[in-house]
Image (cartoon, rainbow, N blue to C red; front, side, top):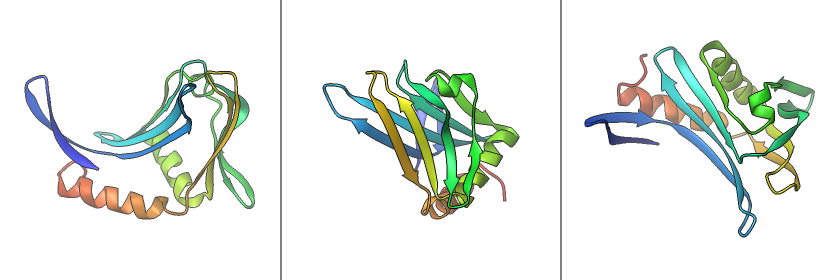
Length: 143
């Protein structure tokens, strides 16, 4: 997705790749998202969780048939606070999404309910290629 919006009186272009998972409907609404944006030093991958989300210590991972190929134990990610990857860490995560079969999230949500989400990654490479093409065409990343 690419768009333009006004920020602080100036027009700002942006492109992003986003995944939103509304895993619990009203009245106990809960959602989780991932947002990838180009940055001057590479990419930023930002995860958003509901406040008071608590992950299992190995519950934030990328899986393949052979086992886990990526996981985080960053306190902010496991407790539903700030969960952002930039620079080299973001690139490693993005590469792992391209190689993985599923992004797996095992946690207790903000309503105290156990959750086990699986985001299939089979179409990630296609989405990533499209994102790269669009970001390049908007001058947000270089060849």
